[in-house]
Length: 180
Length: 236
Image (cartoon, rainbow over all chains, first blue to last red; front, top):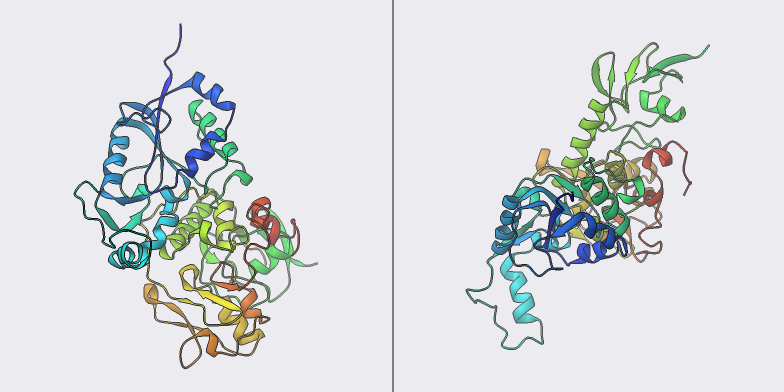
């Protein structure tokens, strides 16, 4: 009798995919992981929408309307939601723009900075609406667990996942807990 | 026979005039703290060092040690309070560790590590704060200031200069600079001043020293603040 595999989804919102890269740093332990889990929506499967899952791992903060839609989809479908990395936990580097007026930001990037054709701020209805501030995901939905780091090391991610998948409260060693 | 107090059941000797914090530090007992530095007059503002003495909460850095005190320090309840206070400090400022040169040597971060802070928990204020880079050797980033007033005390009491001060009250408080322009570059602050060395966070940094020691090889990357502040770790 084979036990049902744990269904896992991941995504990156206002992040740099660095946490996903660090996740790949668990290296050959990925083989152990796929014995235990089945991937739903994640950049690894390229599945576009999240179905019912046991665990959802979210990288990045919330900087636009699309981020909120994805985050709410994860919260709705995942029994356990995990915030991974500095951006998901306190806004991280994208939140450095929080003290700069949004329009000033746009002008700096699209109008004053050279190299961009046309020099106009994009205004396509397809583009997600940006927020004036970047927020951590727990300010939008309930988050069950946090894994800090920029990014957390592969070892920290592995420790966290093995604890979680074994039904233990995840606990990091002192040297695995980092905000940088 | 010397006088003693009890901290978590451990007998700790003290001399007349010492605070509970003084006695604890001398005995190698760690009480988490941020605004306290044994070199300066206690300030009692961060409240992280709150302990329970004979059933009442008091700041151990300002409370005189008195014969027979029963002090509770390392308890689940007090550490939960300390964690909440630390989380509030994080959300009240703009503490972005990955973008800060003090990361790994920062006492605010180290206390958070010690208390097992996994998230700031509260909603962020993202306050608008000024950065002052006008001084040739020192940068003042108010985003990271926790109002411990160690620079205020050090500049006044050790350097004899009164370069820093506090203005406003409550959430409207800010660290101000004593010059007509309000800029650090127009003061007589020197890079060798004690006020430049005592900042527990990355609010006051010396220019031109960025990443001399790489992230991952800094003090609190390997040692807890308890080990460092009770003499169990390496000395700078």
